[in-house]
Amino acid sequence: MAETPHSPAVAIRDLKKIYRTEEGSKTALQDINLTIEKGDIYGIMGLSGAGKSTLVRCINGLEQFDEGSLLVNGNSISDLKPKELRGLRRRIGMIFQSFNLMPSRTVAGNVELPLLNTGLDKEARAKRVAELLELVELADKAENYPNELSGGQKQRVAIARALANEPDILLSDEATSALDPNTTKSILALLRQLHDSLGLTIVVITHQMSVIKQICNKVAVLDHGTIVEQGRVFDIFANPQAPLTQSFVATTSNLDKVNDLIAEHSPLIDTGKNGILLRMKYVSKEVSEPLVSHISRQFNIDANIVFGDIDVVDGSPLGGLVVVLNGQRDDILAAIDYLKNRNIGIEVLAS
Image (cartoon, rainbow, N blue to C red):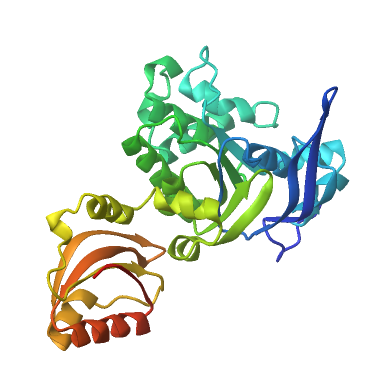
């Protein structure tokens, strides 16, 4: 088993997976084409039953597939002998929603498990465990048992265990879905830190678009076993194409709340005699100007921000504003043209 220096971490072509039972067959994955480059934090997003976990089990060789090819670090999974496959799996760490810790072993004992039968002596194993617990900020919990830990601490133990054999790739299968929002943020921040310091490639399996938004640089959206959309996270959030992706993205934004205000005839969105109610969306990474104040000055109009929802994704603003523009109609229309020419997505909601 030899790694190709410039090969992607994972390359999948035309993959198909069928489950066969006495009741018949079910296609779990169909026409999967995916490239995960080394150093990516790649999100695989989908609803329950979309095929996410099946795909990740194919990546680490736990599931055999029926058609296509799957290469990890340049090695074809289906061509590896059992010993070679075991060696490859040691290069792939994995964390789960349920932590999978052994309750009868201490934190240190759980982290040590993958190091048993590797040829390392007891002293070397203890040193490695101490290094790993330091990495995940649990050095003071080494002698505690899992039932003495919070959910976030348990996941940190699981992460340390997954890193024991110094993997190149870390698979995260719904690792934060059982955690509260603040703990989720801290675990994702830890994964980002480990990615940066260890040079990991991370594959994030999730049904939470907010997780994709916080940590990933690329994403593929799975629906009923097929990829309906994939690309860079900023591009997918800024301009989702597939209906499923659009519904996912909408869950992370407050901009659609304006529809409720319109239905309620709220005075917050009163446009007056000549005003226009706009939804402005940042759809380009180049946008960085203070546009609202700029159009107010340049076009002599009043701009009232009803509400906004802007995050920074991949170093660029992503989101938008709901704004009421008041002034002379020609000035307002000129301001709208100005915004469009600067790659701002404009939707007129009321006038």
